[in-house]
Structures are given as C-alpha cells and as structure tokens.
Image 1 (cartoon, helix red, strand yellow):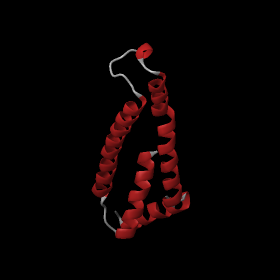
Image 2 (cartoon, one colour):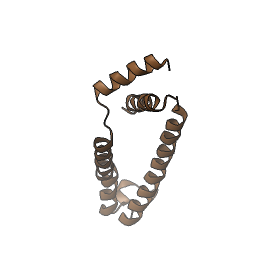
Image 3 (cartoon, helix red, strand yellow):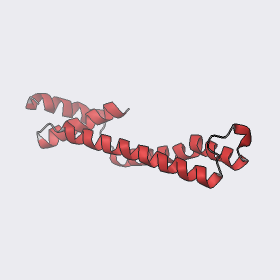
Image 4 (cartoon, one colour):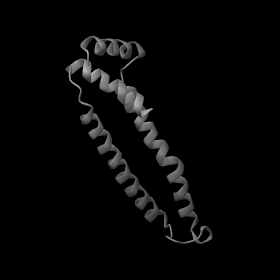
Length: 112
C-alpha cells in the first residue's frame, strides 16, 4: 500500500504548494527504509544476545530461550511495530477518497 498512499500524499502536496516535489518524499521514504534496516539489526542482535542464541549452532543445540527469541522475532516484534504503524497511520492520514478525487481534479486544473 506504500505506493498508492505516497501518490495521494504527493498529490495533496502539489495542490497545497503548486509545486512538484516528489524528490523530497522519496528522500524521506529512503531515509526511513534505511532506518528500519538499522532498527531490525539492533533488535535482532539484542534479542539474540538476551536469549542466548548460539550463532552457527543447529536447532538442537539452542537453549529453549533462544528458540523463544526466534519466535519473538517472527511474531511479537513485528506485531508491535505494525500496531505502532497502524496507530500513526490512523491518526495522521486524513485523505479520504473524496479528498483524493478533488486533489486529482485540482492538479488537472493547475496543469501540473
């Protein structure tokens, strides 16, 4: 859903500023994408260290806490980040289908 939402946000920006500035939005997108990779690495390292994960070891050699840590990586942590993202999206994304249609018509009028 990132591309359609980003397109609607860019259209609203064009209507408000009468300028096309997609580069700024792509810069923010890249920044937060790279930040997400960094956060993922830090979370993985932290959880694996706390749970005693043995690097390079087979599944049988792992302590039960390390197996629990892997489950946390696959379920709990993504659920937390998805909940945070959903709350932020719900709070700040105010573009309705009607607003989007009005913005698209305005862009055609402005010949942008």
